Length: 245
Length: 316
Ligand SMILES: Cc1cc2nc3c(=O)[nH]c(=O)nc-3n(C[C@H](O)[C@H](O)[C@H](O)COP(=O)(O)OP(=O)(O)OC[C@H]3O[C@@H](n4cnc5c(N)ncnc54)[C@H](O)[C@@H]3O)c2cc1C
Ligand SMILES: Nc1ncnc2c1ncn2[C@@H]1O[C@H](COP(=O)(O)O)[C@@H](O)[C@H]1O
Image 1: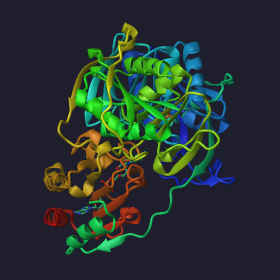
Image 2: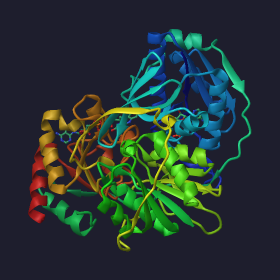
Image 3: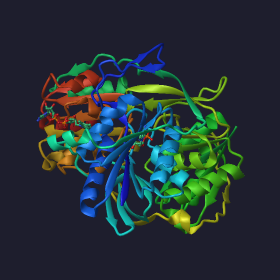
């Protein structure tokens, strides 16, 4: 089976977020970039399936040259080859169009993604790709097994989960506990340097959205401390001051 | 503007989140709401109170489970039939993936995680939460058709009118619409759903073990709250996975979030920072969570939990 894993190159979860140029540009100064945590689950499950079903795993990112170390990391974790679509990932529709194009060209049967990116948190690229290719999309997937051409999954829903089945080809947006995050070992890191990383140019797509400006949430006021011997006071404050009870 | 609102249901009842979606739609235009599968008639009529002028009901039994592709086909067709400029849905495990596919099918501009009503003075701009609650983006939706998935509190569900008339909405569905089969569902019944809860009581590793959750659940019961937890707590299997709050779990935006024995790691805060009011109970005065809190108590969870429960009962 040919598996395609789509990964984002995103600020580490501990990053402070700031913007430049009158709040129109992300400030990457001092920010460390990682594989999106959900994408990392997708990748980990793909590597397990590679071992258990004799599949090949290609990782794909739509991004500029700075994202290559992130793709190399995915190769070090165990992917066989990588594709970078050389473009600023302008919006979900643009990104999905590039992924659909590559998925078609490469004949991938299983396309794994994260349930959402942690920069835009949209949770939509898998659905758009599924619609573009006319194949099922399932998200958020917490368990995924292959039986022949059948894919058996557990999908998280509010307050529980549902068990879902569909045939390949298919797109899934992954989350824990689908697999354990994998850490690259020394051999992986060495071999990643020589694994193929193909750079392709994007196809032209009209974008339906435009980011006008970024904003930071208003700063939080100081915390009011209450003695553990006087929880009654807390209840009064919650009622009369915060008005949340 | 014509607005179609997807009224999501669960076991015959309309989701609270969808009432907010109707209110959101009402704020921007004329609302037609559409519900799929088996939904109680009274629930459908009730959508009128929140601003729906018309309610469509696609009754087909096969739609009683949220099948993403089938729902996409129905909603895309209804957008056409109703000449809807905008489709509004609630962000949810069903609403978000369906929004994505409908937008792709209809050639619509798409925004999910929308936190506020749109700005329509010169264009159509929505405020979307990004970087897991650490920032917002003002996004212009340029296409004639738009699909918007809203998060909790983007609009206030309030009663503005009377009951709506419900019209059957017949649908023709193909096998391809049911390419994904739902074979079974496992769900906690009767509990308050975490993403929709107005109050959340959440426990971390400071709770020491699953056997101590009784005190936390008792407080949640008194408050009519949902229970949540930190990631290690669900990783260790102390609590079910769907209770895990944070960057890689559920993002909540309740009126009140009470955190017991949670240190306040940045990844946990990412899931709670749109709560209106945060109370932190931790035995360590240096716990980082206090910096993100409105009220704090330095103390032992096992001492404070029962006292707080009694104090709230007494104040009722
Ligand atoms: C990529 C990534 C994603 C992550 N996503 C998430 C996420 O979505 N959600 C999440 O929660 N975490 C997430 N984490 C983990 C996060 O970094 C923290 O490790 C985690 O939140 C800590 O959980 P905790 O506060 O329960 O435990 P701890 O950090 O161990 O804190 C326990 C707290 O309990 C207090 N305590 C101990 N005993 C008592 C007592 N008797 N009474 C009162 N207080 C007591 C202690 O003082 C301490 O502050 C993520 C991490 C990474 C790297
Ligand atoms: N620029 C990108 N390159 C490759 N994959 C992406 C990109 N953006 C999003 N994805 C994939 O789509 C998933 C959902 O992203 P989103 O819809 O932005 O929340 C991510 O977890 C990735 O797997």
